[in-house]
Image (cartoon, rainbow, N blue to C red; front, top):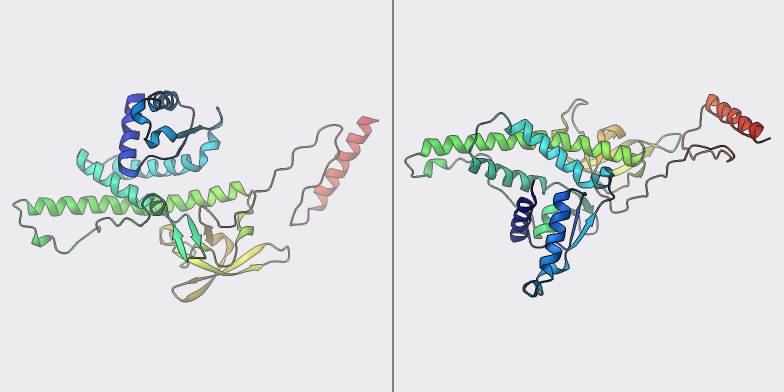
Amino acid sequence: MSTPTFILALRRFIAQKGCPSRLASDNASTFHCGSQFLTKISQSPEFKNSNLHHLNWRFITPRTPHRGGAWERLIGVTKNVIKKCFSDKTITIDEFRTLLCETENFVNSRPLLYCADSDEVLTPAKLLYGREIITSPLLVDHLDDISHSHETDLRLQYRILSKLRAEFIKIFQADYLVSLKTRHYCEFQGTYNDTLETGELVFANLGLPKNPRVNWPLSKVVSVRLDNHNLPREVDVLHGGKIYTRPIDRIIKLELSASKPTPPVPVPSPRLGTPIQPALRAVPRRKAAVKCDKQRLDLLQSKQL
């Protein structure tokens, strides 16, 4: 993407959704040139009363793409789903634009955070517009009322676009839940489910063990059962007025949490001359691991002597 193309895309975004107070991006040359251009023109007298004058552009640390994982993960999932759905389809540019707008609305309607005080699920659409945006239904029954000479063509076009959008929704939901589980697992080093709290909303598999993730509904956690090591193993969730008991691996948390804990800090590897500090573990270590640590400590002490 060239800098002029990016500036035009940013202008379209501002015209539709308003000027943001802060932008975050990687260190691509296009973004740096765009930032310098906006900074220069914002100093003009014409932009004195414009929100663009207060725009704060934040770049992530160079050579650290993982710092932008919050948006790169979702961009990657969305682009892969678009390739799966539309790459081998022959549609016009107007149809493609329509599908992009409708899929954008679906992506922005995903649940981010459950607010227990107001019993409301926060979505990106509510942050952008203050309300949920409802798109046209996938299939309608009153197409016969259209008085047009090309009624059959309109019906066929509507059905084709509806099928493509339904395919996008199905694949996106499955891939999105996989990325959610992977994100939480990596962020909390395989122990993210330790932070499950009563009353929060989660995606739960209420069907058969091999039930597709696209069919996992939002459910409320009623209680969490712990094992002998004080780790969660079973969860009682409420959905449709009925309580279901499911294992912890059939539960996926939302992107955000009202009381999100701090991820555990990894323990650095010991160096020569520094004592070995045992890591905090909820599960007792094996005897072989304890013996190995003792031998390494004896070896380090012998080298110091």
